[in-house]
Length: 322
Ligand code: NAP
Ligand code: G4F
Picture 1: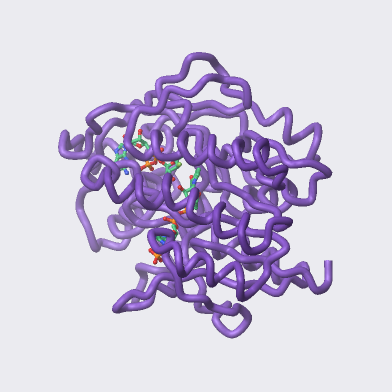
Picture 2 (picture 1 turned 90 degrees about the vertical axis):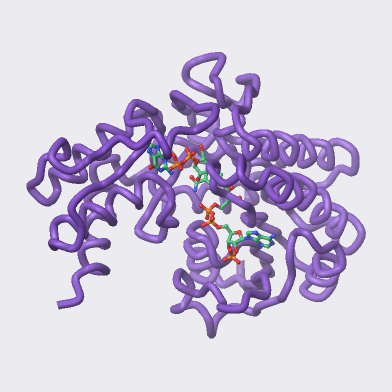
């Protein structure tokens, strides 16, 4: 493992921070592609700043991607960068496509021209299954995306497959179902819930406004899922893998358990607000990770209940300023 070079895009995000920790622990020389922002977004990577080599770049800018690949000559490229919030994809559909769809074409071209033997991981998503046509969803389930975000991820999924087939490049898609952690962005439903539970329990808030409580997701722990990303690039050939827990739970169940962590009943605090309903909803997702289990020997380790408990505890610590 010693001496390998990895380039991670989206390093400042939830998955990027966990993946970088994993790669550093395995002796990789890690390069991170980061955007120039007026206030750098370092919340998730404060503890890693001195250990990573930063390259300024943006998935919208071809020259910065060419430069990134040319300058660090990576053995492995993990493309985690995205406009990752489904809700925003209806507000900014063109940006979502530019970054999540065309951005992947740009990055694949940069690799093809500057370091064709680099292995490539694409952060594909269970949102591609959308209005699901079968239960559970596997690598063979047809896609039916329900949002500009889901559509952008189908585009990049097929680009990844196409570069594998056209140019014999090592390109793999991880079709990851929802995964969460204390580092999850605050607008995603799980973190929004655990942050509010902490605030309500500490007397800092009095209600939690949510949208569709009946939506069901297959939720796992981000720390488990980044191991699968790495395993995919160590596999003997490029391929596509579903990464999931094989369990589905409703938003209501998540809320109920999160409030019970602090001894409260969610019905006393949760208000359903149509403002948070989506123009087209993904009602249920449930993944079958059998292929990853068989070929990669990957399995989820953190349970649904343990995940909620971890997130509530972390938000209690973050909000408790006494
Ligand atoms: P996240 O926390 O939102 O992180 C997204 C990252 O992308 C951030 O580092 C962000 O940088 C960067 N980024 C955004 N636009 C960019 C651009 N134009 N150029 C370069 N970087 C840009 O997302 P995550 O939850 O870690 O997810 C990682 C990847 O997996 C994403 O592609 C997501 O769509 C996909 N995915 C996530 C899940 C999940 O449940 N978490 C499931 C399936 C797939 P800034 O800090 O500068 O904003
Ligand atoms: O937490 P969410 O915003 O995640 P969503 O839409 O499932 O997307 C996440 O997982 C995908 C993998 O399937 C990733 F590709 C994507 O990048 C992202 O990480 O919403 C989950 C569910 C939805 O059905 C939503 O309608 O929760 C429902 N929900 C109910 N009330 C809410 C709310 N979602 C949010 N964000 N905020 C609410 O108040």
